[in-house]
Length: 268
Image (cartoon, rainbow, N blue to C red; front, top):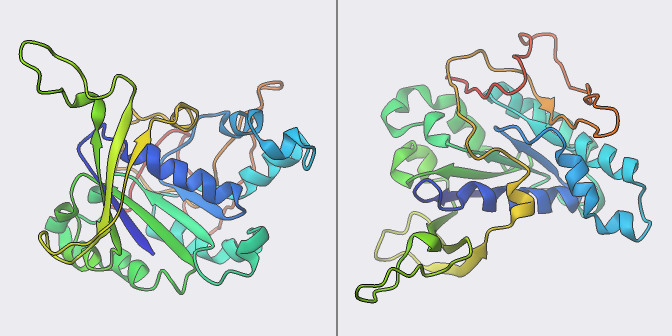
């Protein structure tokens, strides 16, 4: 399944997508994003893990488990690599589930397959038309569905619009009162590609800002698309006690070396 999260900058798209991704990861699936998580992201998840509190896993077992199933990717080739390694990594219900074993979150996807660069998007079109066979689900994040390639647009199943309630003021004369003093977002989910007036709403809800999830990534990280894309690699977790980073990574010799940590890239 392919979901598209739309909205102006700061409307809660990325935070909501990462929340969905973390839930997928904790359920036993594989998560991959095109942006890096903070250095101690697994430690922060362990701090509030119910599995650790009830004694089902030790803290180190939990950290090793989630880091082994969470990846950073930045190219078409790395998506194929992810599809190849996913079946051997999933846990629980995802071992029997035939589809959606891995969830891929592509932020600022209008830079990857923009509607104005339709002639260069055949690689991504090949992936999206066969994503079910690759056992992948996607969450695409863009400001508007019109910004992505039309052929890819027609493969989107759900389109979700986001609005930031803290930017909405109540219509009271001479008084400026925010609709919500606490950060929260209005989300309207509808079936995609049915026409603006004919689109059927699937769900409407208010999504409060989950600060525990928002703290797992840098929402101000700039995306650079001029560098050489790295191979698939694990999202690194730096231990607070030792300060040493988890150096495990999946490296395929036919790909060029990784860039310096923190560089976010695209295939184009």
